[in-house]
Image 1 (tube, rainbow over the protein chains, first blue to last red):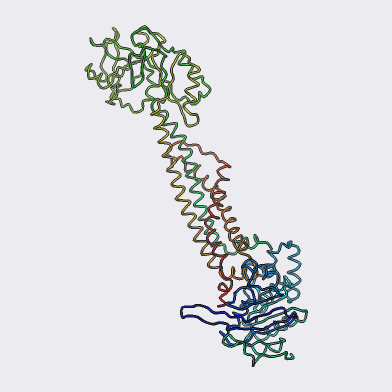
Image 2: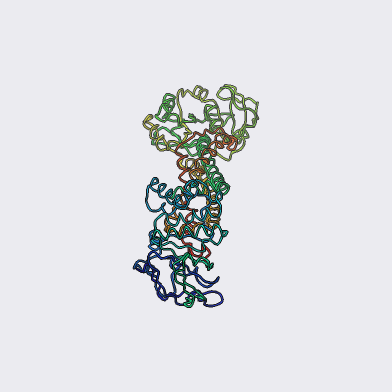
Amino acid sequence: MSLIKVQDVKKIYNGGEGEVTALGGVSFTVNEGEFVALMGPSGSGKSTLLTMLGAMNPPTSGNVIVDDIEIYNLTSEKRADFRIEYLGFVFQQFQLIPYLTAAENIMLPLAITGKSNREQVQMAQNVLNKVGLGEKGNRLPNQLSGGEQERVAIARAIVNEPPILFADEPTGALDSKNSEEIMNLFKHLNKEGQTIIMVTHNPEFLSYVDRGIFIKDGMLDESRHSKKIAV
Amino acid sequence: MKLHNIALNNIRRRKAKMAFLVVGMIIGIATIVTLYTITGAMQTEIADKFDQIGANMTIVPQSDSLSMSYEGVNVSDVGGTPNFITMNDVAKISTIKNKENIATVAPKLLDTLKIDNKERLVLGIQFKEELKMKRWWKIQGNKPASSGDVLLGYQAAKGLNKKAGEKLQVKGKTYTVAGIIEETGNQEDSVIFMDLNELQTITGKSDAVSFVEVSALCSTCPIEEITMQISQKLPGTKVSAIKEAVQARKDFVDRFAQLGIYVSVIVLAVGSLVVLITMMSSVSERTREIGIFRAIGFRKGHIISVILMESGIVSIIGGITGYVIGMAAAVTAGPVIAQMDVSIPWDAKIGLAAMLIAVAMGLAASALPAWKASRQDPVEALRYL
């Protein structure tokens, strides 16, 4: 069943040097429970596409439909509500809040949901256990290794149990060992039913995903789309 | 985790920046508290001192016939059918309900006496009370010390050709010219001042008073109220407030209060600017962080709440500390700055007001940074593009 429908999405920026087409009409769907990699070279438009799927960046034309909701028909504030309910984000470079502990960072999306402190602490501990950091909830980000910070970022993205998890170059700042561990963690989450869309330029990670969507110069590169490759 | 936890954690983490903000707030609030309390205390003190200089009320016997005036006060029946206030009446002035507001009561007997073959205006006064009231008098010679002394107005001395220390014959009695009042340009210049009792005795008008000048402290009680109370105690008299004196005092005290307000407004504006700049800089430093909040799903209102909470917490700390420091400075340095013995009590209401002003200032100055923060585009904030 299609969870995300992207219909002829275009994004054109008006810059000092005239119009720049970041996306020139992209269409695809993502099914519930799929693990999809958005791939392409730098500047191809994959991060732009991710922010559009993430209800943060309205397209110039076209539709993005998630769970039958045309997200850009919503007001900016309703899209914020939509994000907290439907989406989890793992940003580039972890993007943890430096003055909050790992557990507090994880509880951030819960801070505006009206859940009690006790509930929040329990939910944060559950995801900390899930990402293998059960004992490190009280540490500040600068007291954690890069791999551990990435795990905290993933835990923060899934603590609200969102239907969709977005990850933008989640292993970009990690060494190969940590990258492999993180990809295994994503694979594990996907096996539990989590829909994941991940931006990466590393072709090795195609082995972890169900499908690779390639973008080049703002257009889908249909010739390189890949089906599931066994790990 | 609630929004206030985010605000508190940010304050804890950015100690230096927040300390700068708190110090700015403390300086602003402490200055306002110090100024306000010192000027407040000085206003009362100055008003009271001002009230003691010169009379702001006159009491004359009620009469249809008016034949003489002194310093703008119409005095009835001088030398004619007596229509006087008695010394007993004078004593009653100090028994009114607001007796603590009565600073000086100066009874006077006005008469004309033949001195040196010429009718001259003589005013019987209580020297001590009169000198307390007429602080602008500059006396050449000495202040009168006994009932055997007289004071001469400038023109009177000239007319009598007398100098300080010389003798003056009045109704067969010899008096010493203790001093001569320097020219004032008023009617005082042509008057011979002598002891009230003495004049009453030699004129045979024992116990008689032509009029009374009163200086009342009006900072805590309106002069109309005191006038009414005296009128009730002395039914046969006409009690009038000297409007010019009251207005002059009011104008002076109002100007003084205005100065305090102007300085406070300037300090408040500078304090607000410090908060505004610091919060703007803080928001600018946190662009990416605010972008994360927005990307996660925080509404604009949540972002505004976090920024305003931070500012509010800092303002409360700054307000309370500023009040304590401001009051301590006012209590210790107030008398030195004011150059007078002012009493500055610790007042919880001022503390509450200081805190409210600090919070209002903090929130007002943070409103723009908070609004700007809430409008940040998460995509741009995260520098995706």
